Amino acid sequence: MLKAGDKAPSIVLGDQNGKTVDLAKFAKKKVLVYFYPKADTPGCTAQSCGLRDIKDQIGRTVIIGISPDKPDKLKKFDDKYDLGFTLLSDTQNKVAKAYKVWKKKSMYGRQYMGIERSAFLVGPDGVILEAWYKVSPKDTPGNLLKALGK
Image 1 (cartoon, one colour):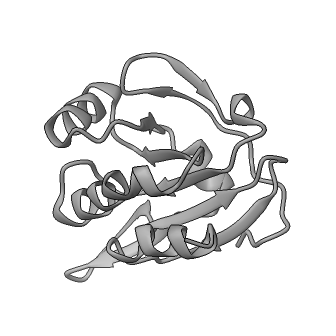
Image 2 (cartoon, rainbow, N blue to C red):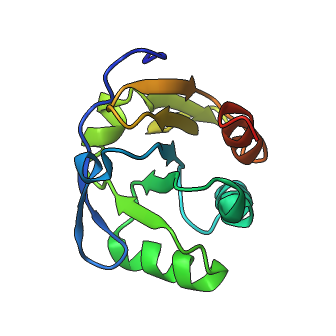
């Protein structure tokens, strides 16, 4: 698992608007990178809307959500809830694997691979400041505010 002090793995993915986004372009800013299993599901909606609701409290910190969903589904999710931040499509799970959030999961006795809801605060120098694995949807905004000293 990644931890504070580790170099953040590279992120270059397509967003909900069909544009390629590179984490490196946010140098000089803190970035919250959060991974969620599936857009427009109850937990993912609560997590994303919670982050939307604190945007005005986090200064220049950038929020980036990543899921295995395709860009068109991310666009519908963004439009439906007026999220207003970048959502990236990791359909091949390459970034999820680099951040060690692509895990074996189990539901109703069936095992499958999927995203472990997690979040990372990356500093302006590309180093992880905080890493939260198995984070609760409702705790993500509070963890971010606390880490930023708010």
